[in-house]
Length: 602
Image (cartoon, rainbow, N blue to C red; front, side):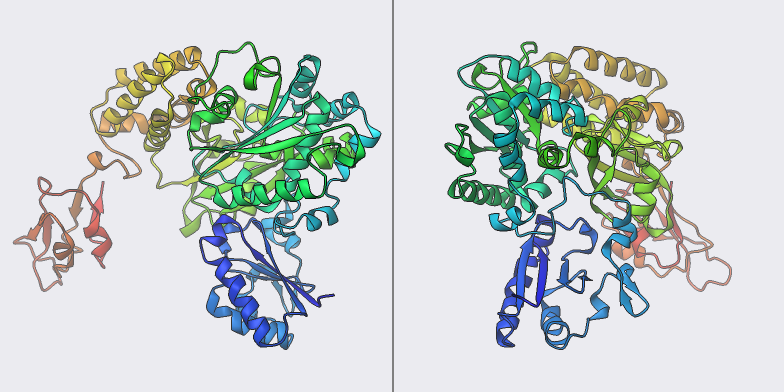
């Protein structure tokens, strides 16, 4: 029995900041102090508060150490783990309350969260099946195989109100019901772990922190629809997730929880991994299945839908990682328990990858219906550097921008669609007043153009033409007529593209036109970028009365565009400088060098 348990984040974010070296050094220091049999070191998945990584939590005290580095380890071992004196300088300061350490659940970041899909992330060692079993792991699978019929499993999922967390929000139980109703000699259960949205890392974190939750849920789904084989399609760029998934699959086989005659029944089910090469289009279900089959990842026309003809033309269900992460808890706790969380039409919780211009970047799970303001201002800690909130992008390249006027909207599937955005898989990018919304639309469209598979003309050519229009606007070559043409093209692409990638590609353009049209007009009429982002619309100038003539900006200028004038400001000893706009390359080096705020851009 250990007297202390030290949990160290081993997710991708903290690992990139040397958390595995921290674990190694921690074990060395514990051995040197003779504490290796008293203190248990556990490498976990993501704790969620990525902005403060690497993270280390010591139990039973619950001390939450943040931004730990390797050199801090000797002090933590000597003072805390040996002498029992908490190293307060390394604590997450919101957990410090006078002379006591308050629970993480009472801090602003965690207080409004409700962890269901993320319940084990940051809690267990994902590479040890015994720890998952200790947290009621595989009890749900045992329950469905010994106490429930396939029909009752599907009805439970239907009654829970669980909708697909991959973006479209289709009722999960209904998808399973359709597949179960189709007779075939072989059926398949697939998991979409491709997660291609820029800034999204929800599924990756679940796979890294709780891989058995997905395996158990896929086996339950296999029993429900009559499938004996499952595939997890995971990005090859997720090496930690791939490694832990394979370990989990091997351990589940060893324990008889995958393979033949699971729990002594006549139900057999197996799972294999398939690595994706990072194509965004393979997040679309028919493209993903085509890729698993070893072909070029391109969408197929629907109908027939995968529930009838999916993988290898057999009935198939496909859900994403987060959807599966809810299944075992629904089976164990009941449909009413799950449906009591969230809103009338959007039940349960939603995991968001919170990023962009916000203080607490990280992974959050909140009940459906939580407002955007609560997420941004309370959980996320607000906007850095005293700047104002401008917009939030949900749904990645397929979603839209939510302006300040909708900060208090409860976030669920239907509300987001109503205001021109979508839930998507859960990326939530926050933007402040320094963001150019035209440039943001261009950024997402550049991504979509690059990721188009090229199979259908509206997406292949239409998005390229749309991007060219945006480039004209940001270059100062746009017209008001071009804005109207661009909007018309958006609706054409939406109506005529083959798959969801093309159908949703114009969303960032349409939502920014809807809420920030004044910025488009400023770009084409005034030839100005209000946020000062679009390079070709910028000009730099020196306020002569503020200039001290020190010459630092001239030294920093790579284009030799700054020279001395014949003007000396009152009270200054040296002549002021000026910028030759014909030579200026608008790099901004002069502004960052000037100590007197004498250089402005506009």
